[in-house]
Image 1: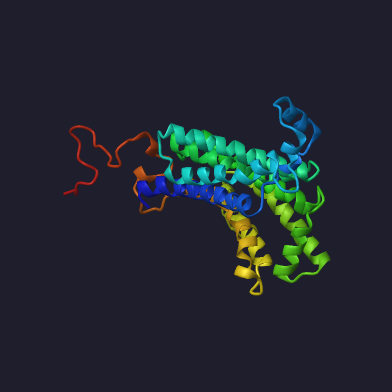
Image 2: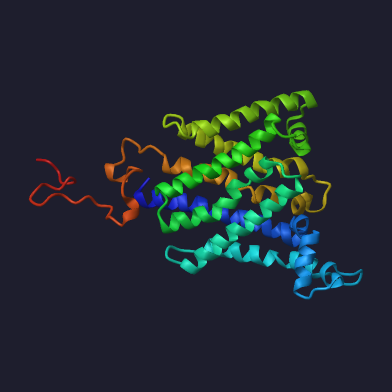
Length: 315
C-alpha cells in the first residue's frame, strides 16, 4: 500500500459514511417524516409562534390544509439532500462547503435529540447516535487537519465509543431493551426469547469491552476490527429481518434505509483500523502510518548531500 492509498482510503471511509448517513435520513424525511413533532407540538412552541403573528389554524393546520409545522417538517428533506451532495463535492479548503457539513451535523444532532425526547429521554437513545452525529464533522476534520491528526482520531474514537456504549446499554438491559432488538435476534438467528436475551446480554458485554480495548495499544486494532464487523452486521440486521419477497419492492423502501443511515457505525471503526494499520515488512519506512504524509512532504526520501542515494545499487 503506497502513501497515497494510506491517505485516500481513510478519507473515502469518512466521505462514504457521511454520504450514506445523510442519504438514508433524506429518504426517511422524504418517504415519511422526521421525528420533530415531539419538539414542536408543545404549548411553548405555539406561544413562540403567536409572538410572530401566527394563528392556531396557521400553526396546526386544518382538515383541508397543512399548518406551519407540517409544511416545515415535510420540506426539511431538502436540507438533508443538500448535505448529501456536499459530502461528495467538499474538498480541502472548501470552507463554505465544510461549514455546510458542520451545520448538517447540527441538523443530525437536532434529529437525534428529538428521538431522545420521543423515547422518554432514555440517554442511550441519544448516545448511540454519536457516530451519525459526528460523521460530517469527522469528514471536515480529516480534510482540514488531516486523517491522522490527533483531534481527528480522538473525535473518531469518541464517536465509536458513543455508538457502542449506547447499544451496549440497551443490550445489557441497563435501560429497557427495545423490542426490535429481540425481534431481529429471534427472526435472524431463530432463537427463542430467553436465548435471544442471553445473546443480547453477551453482546452488550462485548460492546463495553470494545470501548475499553480501543484505548489499549495492543488491542486497539482488534477492537476496531470487531467494531467494523459488528457495526456492519447490526446495520444490515434491519433489512435482513424486515424485508420479504411478499412485500412491494421486497420491503426495500421500508427497511433498506435503516442499514444505509447506520453506515457510520462500521465505517468509522474501519477508518480507525486503516490508520492504525501496521506497515508490511516489505514496505519502506517512508510509508509507515506515522510518517508526515499530511504535511506535504515528498514521497521520495532525500539523501544527504554527498552521500549515496538509498536506492542506488551497492558495488
